[in-house]
Amino acid sequence: MEIQQLRHFLAVVECGTISGAAEATNITQSGLSRSLRNLENALGLPLIKRNPRGVVPTPFGEMLLARAKLIVNENDRAVDDLRAIRLAKAGVIKLGMTPNFALYFASDVIAKFSAARPNVDFQIVSASTATLIDLLMLGELDFAVGLLVKDFDLPEQLKAETLFESSSLVFSSRTHPLTALRAVTISELAKERWAIIDSTAFITAFNSYFKNAGHSVPRIVIRTNSIAFLLRCMDRQDLLTVLPRAIITNPLARSLVELKSKAPAAETQAKFIYRSEELLLTPAVKELIHTFRQEAANVDVQQWSAAVSISR
Image (cartoon, rainbow, N blue to C red; front, side, top):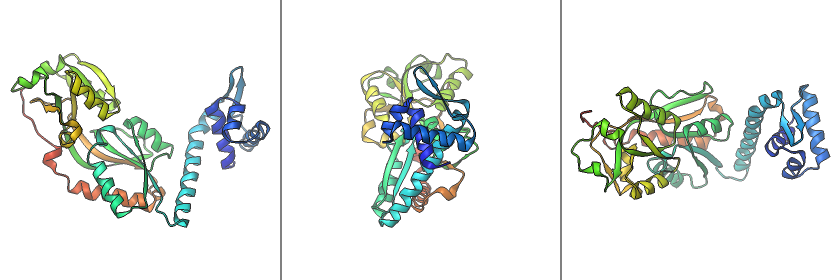
């Protein structure tokens, strides 16, 4: 089994046709078909089947798909790392982060790291936790960092490390009627319209908060992976949202007002997530992780965690 054969197999599955895959990989159709036959002969299993619309993977092909992506990605990373050393560069770090972490803390850490290691380049993906986990499993990210609800379950192939605890608060626009109240109850929160970060784990915790208190789950008008878009919507509509207290330090959040209420899914943790095989981490990645740890030790706990005692 050869890397090039796996590339051809992945191209065929992605394109859905031999002709499309041949064009994408810059090879003749006959050469691509021969490469696939050689791969199937080496494994002793059929990997694709033809239908009137093109080709699709067989059950054996489906089983190979994720591992093939991981093998190809690891091969490419190894080549990139060695090339970086040969060219006296420090390489590229592929980092994933949750949207609620992209506007604060992480950007400061990367700025500090870049000042010390100017030859390191970054490819940063901001996505939901579920998407980041998929990318980590496929070897498309070095590691991920972000705010996660407590007791978040991970696949056994991944490890998590807590950086610091964080509490979230309920925010609204300055014109929202609830800003006039000295205390906002859960029953009042349940009647409002919400805009929140699109995270399955967070939404589950959000819904449970109201259900466990005997209230109907409020309407979530906007679910988004973009903090910037969420804040723009908050600025133009009477919506509520849940965000870490530290968000108020960002200029984009200058129009937000903290409501005097307990927050749904308030308790979160800033965490690393990475694959268990730590030997796969490059020196630059290990140094960045060390920088995150150092900066996390200096986090102002008062800024990130705020206990709000309001009657339900």
